[in-house]
Length: 317
Image (cartoon, rainbow, N blue to C red):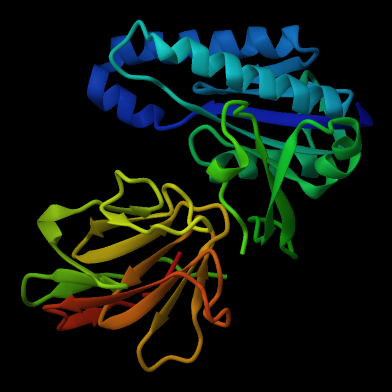
């Protein structure tokens, strides 16, 4: 058993569970195995050592963090080329998490804080994203002047006492600066019961839209394809999503810099960073900037048919 400073990489397929539901077990298993084996081979070709495969993902180690970052940029770029002309009808996307620190090698497996943190980052990254800790960026930034490191801010990571400063590493070479988003302890859901059909209304600028519970999910973002199109460079292309979950409208943040929710009658906004929150009554959303910023992009919401009974633990997660 030895301990050594190294860079830990977790890479996995996004939404592998839905692949099995859509394609069936046999076809999905073939697709997942194919992608995982390809990722493992490419990571080793980039100088990494694959420790193990994880069903729908790969865990690997790199001795040099700069090599790790450069290698995963290449993996993501080549994966996009592979899925541009897919053999299957579905294009499986991947995500990556990186951290560096002391790692213990025990019987062919690896353990340590960096292992746990890299896995958590991979879980929180969205499709096509590479997330890295400050520790990775500090030792690679000067060595990689052509890489773009987007500061995400301090995020809570399960198992860590204090929030960690996180970065997203942009790998898309064909996107100019105008395509990048500019930066400007939650409880579990309880049970919700609605006594009448629910609708949710949104207002921003001169725009007004309304959706019934049967018309979700609703996407919010800067993309022209979003249901709630927010023409502001600080808003992520896919910033948030509203779903209907167990009798309630649930907002999930998918953005680079976060979403704030403020309910009427409350002075304390809820900050979401890849987390979820039940929307009820009246309130506002602030996108990418907190409410304290006067020019923060904002959306007002109003949920009707809201004679709700909130179960214990209601709020956010």
